Length: 131
Image 1 (cartoon, rainbow, N blue to C red):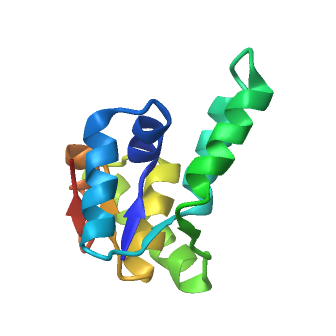
Image 2: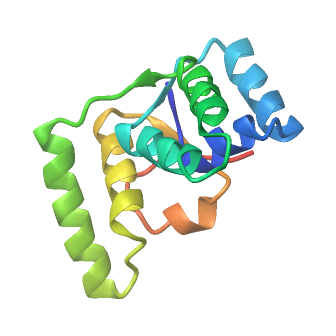
Image 3: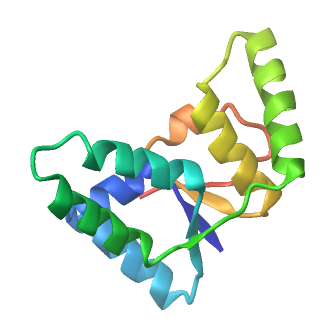
């Protein structure tokens, strides 16, 4: 299974061919796709910042319909707390939301599909896939 990051989901919303091709590749590999509640929240945040909110919200819901939404178990919350502390102590913090996304993906044993690979490479144990 592959967890879709916000960068990938936004690229799908913008109908970028590279993202559409990657999604088709995942389906061809019979991969299940997921995303996190954090990624969904980020998409809705963007949808409510544009002039045609109704249209954009429909588009976001359509994109999210292709991916199963992962839950956030206590294990992911604990992992998040540890990662934040570890990254901050090294001066490599990547932001709370991205750390939480990574924690959820790791907890569910999923690769994270992102265009922002170098950003997430600071997270130990996170399997990354890019496009």
